[in-house]
Image (cartoon, rainbow, N blue to C red):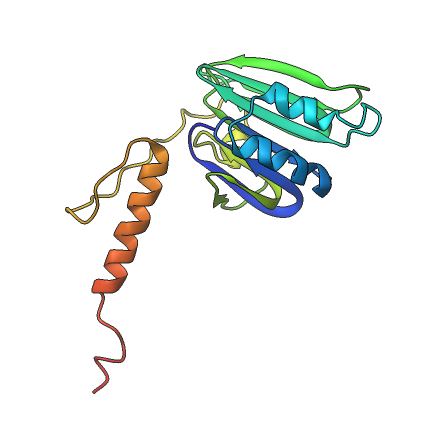
Length: 196
């Protein structure tokens, strides 16, 4: 997935990989999808594995695939995806009231949420966690609630002051921020040394 991915703790299974994120209430399906998604499988390969036991037995599933300028959403069941278009419009996609799945492709989506929840999310790069929803591309759930929200904010980079070497991409920014924070914690005087 491109951009920052945040998840909101919950009871569903979220699997995030380099190109695809999937959310399902079926933990066994999540375990089957993990090896594919973690290795960079396409949304089509993920859907094929999800359908392995037949369409009738396929549980709810939301698959988000980001590939260059396209974001593909495959929805089965009650999960709701909200994507922000470059013009500020909000697009919703879900699999409710269909017997198979809903599939839509969005050009140049700025990011979005699936089953958005209030409050701060927790970052995830690649992994499998219990989640109630997730956001990607820098969007917060609050930004996804109104169709004509202001442009997405940009995140200012932390000054490195020579402590770390920046790496390319948003993952590098997260790693850099963590190293800067850890370095600052080591430099802070401890309470034990000041109590003598």
